[in-house]
Image (cartoon, rainbow, N blue to C red; front, side, top):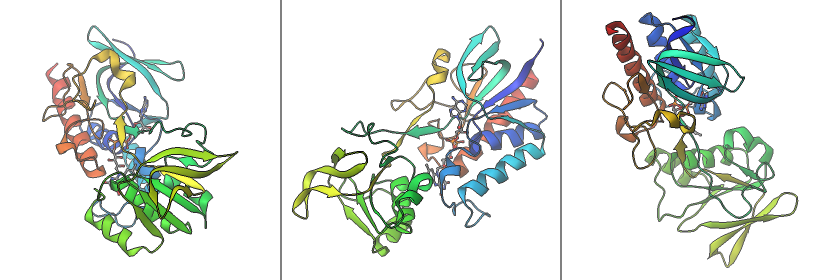
Length: 307
Ligand SMILES: Cc1cc2nc3c(=O)[nH]c(=O)nc-3n(C[C@H](O)[C@H](O)[C@H](O)COP(=O)(O)OP(=O)(O)OC[C@H]3O[C@@H](n4cnc5c(N)ncnc54)[C@H](O)[C@@H]3O)c2cc1C
């Protein structure tokens, strides 16, 4: 069969890059297709919980992992995969640049995307005060007042990051208490610039050309409106699997791909690793994504060898 890769890895985040390093060392010929080198971690201002790599910026982390994969000869194409289908024993991938690639095995490592809240004004003010990435856009709010919506790790870390830049940060969460790591909770409590508004929802985003205020569903300090310059929405994530619909993979209730211990999916020849899966007890971190990537690469190696 001409022009058919043994393996195509879709995703250039921690799962895809770790899989690539292992695949190269197993001698499995492959290409990585991934729009953003490093994946979500490249958006993080600092990663400090990956053993052996302290105080590293997300950007440096991504570059280092990319360089490591390339050291073993991996080809990384910064391209979007639009669709994938099975044709007999071969997978056919349609890319955003018009190319078509074929592979005997595929590894889906496309992670997650930020969930939108569908608030009134959310779309209209996107880029004009509404953001989904504190590390990308925080700088534009230097010495200003912002709010972060959410209560998990990403919301907490965004609030702390913005606390270093902005004059004031409101952390608005619908729950009674944050559900982030205790470490982040302590950092938030120590930070005088961060004010928590709990058991409250943002219901509308208002302004003229730019965002000026948000309307809350409860009164806070005597008012239902909060004057802010920026709103950072950190309301969780959903898996990036739309492009793989035709594979009809088994997914859990939340849409994450169900995997076996070896990261195989319900479709022969397809593996999945990282944030996109229901693996690692749904603990979505760099360390778990990388280990699933490594496990998948090893399993793919044995599968290809047996064929
Ligand atoms: C703000 C923030 C801070 C975080 N901080 C930490 C931390 O301190 N420590 C920690 O361990 N974890 C942290 N995480 C979580 C960590 O980033 C993720 O668990 C990890 O990146 C998951 O890796 P992944 O490879 O599964 O997916 P991702 O990192 O999401 O990578 C997905 C890859 O797939 C590509 N892709 C998606 N769709 C397509 C497509 N259709 N075609 C081609 N390519 C596609 C993307 O461009 C990307 O290259 C943080 C996450 C965020 C958002």
